[in-house]
Image (tube, rainbow, N blue to C red):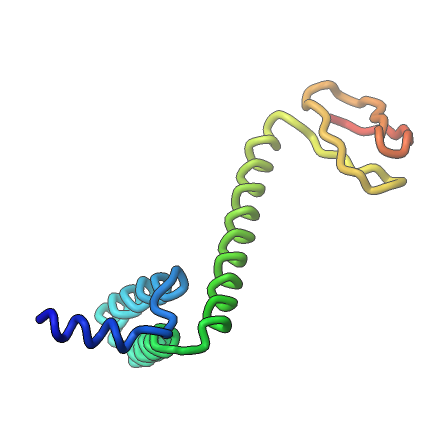
Length: 134
């Protein structure tokens, strides 16, 4: 058994291996398998095969720089999506307590507490004053 393990280790020397993108593709395969079992749609079967092929191509690739760049792009996309979701959740939470105004002169966003009726809003960025209803 150790002989096979050593052979595989020698084979993998200089190859990329696995990373977060491959783990995501593995999870995606499981989702496609479940959808294929439930719907019996052959499209999901082909999606499984494509993802599996991508995993093997990325794992056994000797072009480690390109695979690293693909993984960095994936991680950056995940981070951006997470930030958008976090910001949207924050806006929903803030929306109950604050009214967001946009300065008509410079476009700066201004946050004013709700419940004060019609007020004069002062933009700290450009000094413009305008009326708004909180």
